[in-house]
Length: 346
Image (cartoon, rainbow, N blue to C red):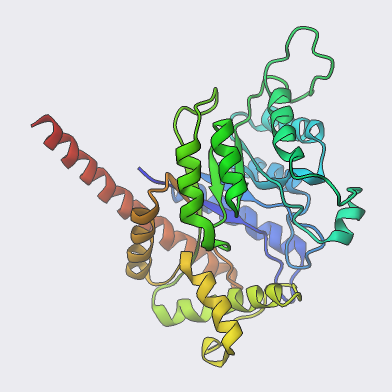
């Protein structure tokens, strides 16, 4: 059955602060645990006024400390900003503290602008070809140490933390397939290359110690409410945020506006159209139809939901409805599986 999870950017709202954002993330993760979500990922971004998860490993530790069973991890760590050893030690510490609940998603983008890269003490001239080498080095630190191994991650060595390759282009698909790792594609904001990336990943996949068969996680935007008009109203915050980002003016998550989409210009409507390709907005029936269609088309093993809603209670409601929808979809999948099994054995 298809797993379902949450990607949280810990959005800082207009009139709010980072403490509020992180407190709300903790409450959402606690509720998600009870609603059947498989994992709760946060993402590394820097110099972003509207995102509170820059110190990603610390946020992961905070959420893991306030939950019991749900997997917690990075979606993802931007490896060009760090040395593999540092990440092995950070996530090795997380695994030591929280057991087999920690995931490590890795991306090759810096997650920020050029000036901030320099402030992170990166040169800004790193060769993309270094990313695969760094992933392999990081994997080695997390395995049991070899005889006479000169550098050992402590904690980290022997934890075998599962690694996921993140991507919004074809590069990540090729690398994940080559290394035999799970692949998480950012279809929630970069849907254009989705189907080609899936084809490349699945056709190039080579089994590894971590994974015997391809495993795909796909990003998907949701904004659910008891009725379509309410969901559309709440989605306006996300629309404004995305438009501001694309226009080079990122900021805190804006307050929602009624009838926003009717006032957008042509270029803004184009942004919304692109954003909506891997999205669902409306009530439970609306979501079920769109998510089911998306899963049928992609055959994803897991879907990870992003939901940017200004009102905290409305955001909780959206994730609760989405969880209920996924329970129904999974029930349908199970029924189809049983029917197929009976037909095969007939």
